[in-house]
Amino acid sequence: FQVALTTFGFGLNCFTSLCGIQHYPMMLNPIFESSSPSDFWGRRWNMVVHGMLKRGVYKPVRTKYSRLAASTAAFVASGLLHEWQLSFVFYPDSEDLTGSCSPPACYLPGYGRMTLFMVWNAILIGLEYAIGGAAIFLLLKEHLPSTLVSLLVASTALPMAHWFTNDYVRSDFFNDIQIGFPLILRVFD
Image 1 (cartoon, rainbow, N blue to C red):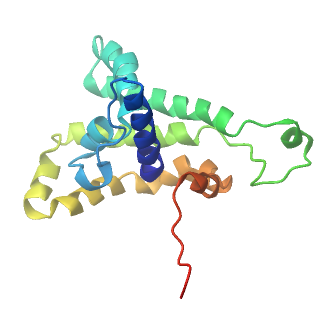
Image 2 (cartoon, rainbow, N blue to C red; image 1 turned 180 degrees about the horizontal axis):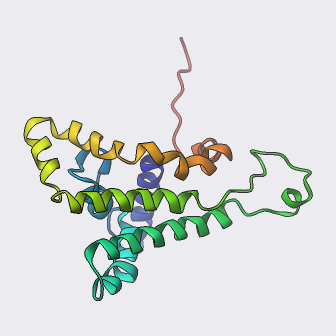
């Protein structure tokens, strides 16, 4: 996902730069530079959606409730946003509904898994808050290489990552998106 989003972000940045529009980076290298789960999700992963959720969900909820409640609300909203996005990425056409088409070409997604994945990450952030914030991750960072710490942080999402990626994998989304990436082939042996 990071490669696809980063590539899309670079293309979007090029387009907006040519149009004279100010832009922000899509990703800030979350896989290799994150120091905690809150750093991964709050400061590095998909900054466009992060900014929208921070302004539209986190800050309004935070004015009345705790940081944990606001973070949870933002993660649930993110899950619902991703579920909504499934409805047009995998929009069923008349062939899909008549049964004359078979997966992966015609794929009807399941709903709920992406929201569960986001709730899992809200729980991780809640645990981070409960056990002293990033102190544990700072302790790890003192004793381990920062890249290893970042990979450990990113791996906290892995036990439930299939909830998020299932629809994309089963629909051959990643095979289809390859057309947007340059392909280098060896011509001669």
